Amino acid sequence: MTTLGLDAGELSRCVQCGLCLSSCPTFRVTGDESQSPRGRIALMRAVERDGAPLSTPVRRAFETCVQCRACETACPSAVPFGHLIARTREVLADEGLSVSPPVRAGYAALGHPSLVRAAGRALAAGQRLRAVPRSVGLPRLPLRQGPLTPSGSDVHLFTGCVMDAFERDVHRDTMRVLAAAGFGAMPTGDRVPCCGALHAHAGLTRPARRLAQRAVSALGDGRPVLVDSAGCGAMMKEYGQLLGSDAARELAARVFDVSEWLAPRMAQLPEVRPLDLRVAVQDPCHLRHVQRVHQATRAVLAPFVRELVELDDDGLCCGAGGAYAFVERSEARAIRARKLASIARAVPDVVASANPGCAMHLASGGVRSVHPMTLVARALEEHATSRSARR
Image (cartoon, rainbow, N blue to C red; front, side, top):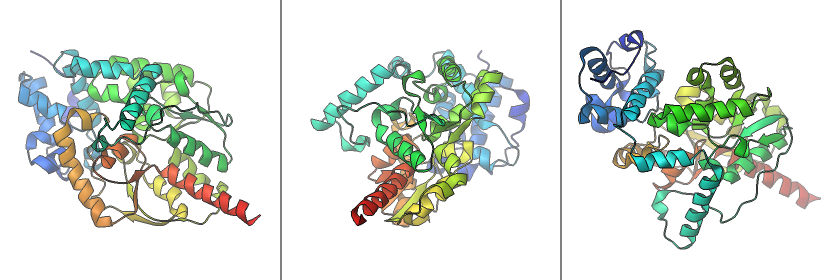
């Protein structure tokens, strides 16, 4: 008999009221109670309290959770569902009941920057040979890319693993925006190869802790740590809970989403002519429901585009969920279909998304998705070009 080791008090907080149901992406597309937060908690209780077996249907209920944590925002009882599902997924992984060996190998590679970069170059070559379908949603990858050069030492810019290999231009755009606001940034690069978020979502807690400890050791100089990937920022802000050390809590307190950092400093950016774009904002779940700083994206973008429009789905998950779009493809696509319909109703020129997984998942569905910092950097660049031309 397997126990999940869940806190009885946390399990008891759920009163099965159902206010979370409309916020849960898997329940919305299936209508199945086992695919809802309260249904999953009922199954956790059955395993933990009554000795119910971890049968295939029970495991699938846990595995198909996107871990968007929208239920936490909706819950009037403050049920820490993210902690409950993370612990449950950890037990499944430790028991060998989830995460196949090939997937584990992929996660292990994320802690080795040279391997991630090699994978990026291979995919770039595949794109040139038209061997990588556009439906995968990858941005146009460079065959070669130069390193990020520090622009100063005011802040750290966390660069991470997949994003650094696949979307390094977003980091460059972020550094340009920070420079325009008067801040020099030090890219973390190989010092902190991965935040561990993907590992933690899969239940691979031990490697997640190793990567988190590496970050804590490398970034202990007291400077702010800015993050332009919502999932990474959410993970790093919870290092204190993951590691339980004072050093981890101290680092977590210095982690900011880049828009969160810039929003109160907007007066330091130059006034420019806005881009002639109607932009819909897609809130990554880990920005909206974990960090809860999604309004900062709007505050930063608004002066730099003609029009911002809101989607009418109340921030429902897009289905990316870190690696969820790759390991739970059918569920992820069903969830994305709702998001695509909401985007179509908004009729934007472009969608702004502050998370690479969301951006790629939406792009694979035919959406033109751009990071908010890229839009701001573009407006600043056009302003600088215009001024040079007038001279």
